[in-house]
Image (cartoon, rainbow over all chains, first blue to last red; front, side, top):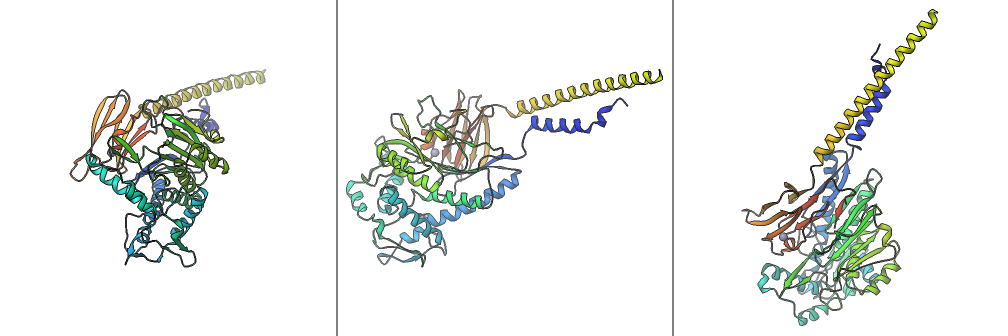
Length: 354
Length: 139
Ligand SMILES: [Zn+2]
């Protein structure tokens, strides 16, 4: 008779719920995983799932998609019974073949042609000849630092004669591509990662997946927000050691993409000076105006192409380009540490913290 | 008269019931709070550094304790990234990788910050559990 609480199931239920709320909160937990297998960089998947198994399933499907795009877009590897950009680049009897390729290659190359126009001819996937000169010198200089050298102006200008994107002939109907200049090659390094990330993100969105964040070598794409309705918090690294600020910016994203191109991401050293991997098509040298350029926009492919383009453009010209595009914002960091941002960049900044 | 006694008895009984329930609720609330605090203290063991090789976690180290860790990779463990944790910060002191980009990276100490060595497939990441509004990722 005195133990009335047994007759009060309501209170018991309420207390159990309360203890649950204090103890751990929502049932879905945050998981993450890495891979080094794609696009010569590190890929990180972060996502909320009810269990490790559920997360592993989705992560596996993401990696298998990334793997396909990697195989199609790489210019350094060939795979059995498969045409990819590497086989498009290869010469047979002194000329490029007409190669029948996967429609995903056609779509990406058409997109690349479009971005060539939109970026005022700054992002050019037909620059393979120039970029491969730099790639070879960088690889040799990295493996043998005391012998590290710069390409000669002669080599670069000779290579630059074979970078006309109009010599890339695409037949959409037949699903073929051919390069009509034998000395020309494709290098989609400036857009392939972002393009692949965008395609994988859409694949997930179509499956109704939400609460995931992909980061393939600095190409970040959020798929929805977090399960609790909050946005993803993304910090842009401040590469300057002496600076007090850990982050250049602290952003809240939900469905958007953030792509950062930085001179500190990939480089080699010649006579004590760093030479990074983003080559200005006009000077044929690494662009030295900025330490990093970050772009926030919906489409990660646009973000990738734009961050590369802005890296090679003057600030004024770049700012004008960004302001002309809808839902696209950018942040530039100069070598002396000063930052510039486009007019709407602030709307992505976190209020709670910097 | 009988009616009155009975009423009082019911009233007394229900008051005692109410008091029992209150004690029960208070005790349960205390237990729940203690449990929550315990979880918070045990799980929030402070800022730590997690090292992964090719995606597999190989070690966790507290940022609060100065330590030097040899991260070995390669077929004969011939490759090295020397991780140093000092004064609450982690950095790669030296590395045998060709590009040396990991050892040029500034020391890391805040949630989400990481140092990557692409040639060795090593990722060193900071998890600072007590940091409020910590980023999900730093790029
Ligand atoms: Zn390294």
